[in-house]
Image 1 (cartoon, chains in turn green, blue):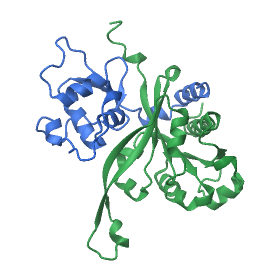
Image 2: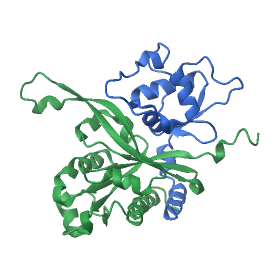
Image 3: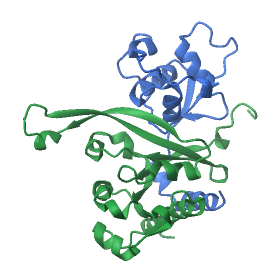
Image 4: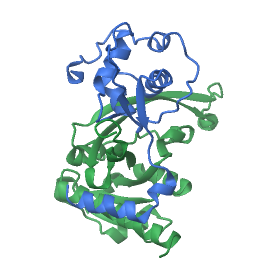
Length: 196
Length: 123
């Protein structure tokens, strides 16, 4: 068996989603901590029921091709390979895409406080689906005029204890900090579910 | 090898799905998700005679490592769904092995989460 059957030493894949509006720095964040250059994959998605805002009433279904940039971090001591998937911005298509959330450990929602509204759909979606997430306020040019409390209030976060972190998506320390914060939250939740 | 694949040319047609799956376009038995990792099953006589795309995929994921479905899709310049169908076909034929993502019962295991956290803190 040794040398042939060694699955116990192989790593299990685990997925974390990196969400947020277009141009908020998702791919930069992935690139900062990934052990590989971020790769891009595409998926063709159909959105049923988005026609409600189509005035012509002809198109009841929309089809789009979405692109995701992703990277990976191998964690040999945990026997886990962490995949960081930067989610595409077209959140209205996520509802038809079970594969995106299934099996996800949690998410980081990146926000640009100059365009906070672009992050609302991701926040709503994760809250509705019960996927744990932390918020990372990307500090462009190293500046962030708002406090974590102000950002939390503006996002109307359903869970008041949701961590809101100031980060620079180019900083390895910052991004690792956001991932650790997410893990801390998951550990706290797991403790509550399974005490002792 | 995989890195040397040329990016898709502007006017090049996408390889048709039935060409990739040897005529099958129906769902395969093996269900793969984007983060499922795949390794080629070693064979004595190589993969001569298999379709070129299959050989390319198999060459990408030699054991013991493993590549995620999304990674194979990206490196093959294919979309996710055709890639999962292609890999499902390979899995049904015993050409690849796969490792599914951890189930919710495992990812809510506090000991595993702490191991992940500890390892992450050291990257």
